[in-house]
Length: 56
Image 1 (cartoon, one colour):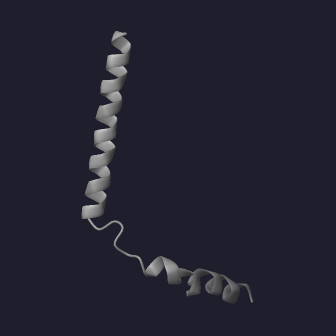
Image 2 (image 1 turned 90 degrees about the vertical axis):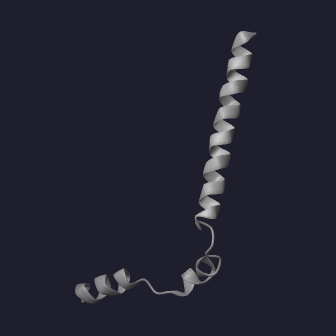
């Protein structure tokens, strides 16, 4: 029975750590860019063009 108390305590500690990391990442602006991912597919890949030019 004592191991259950230990496991509950460890899991709560891990959950608090993950919650703190998530809040920190949101406050630091990790998820602020909502526009660029939606238009990223429209951009050409420069590396592919350079490889095609060198092959010719």
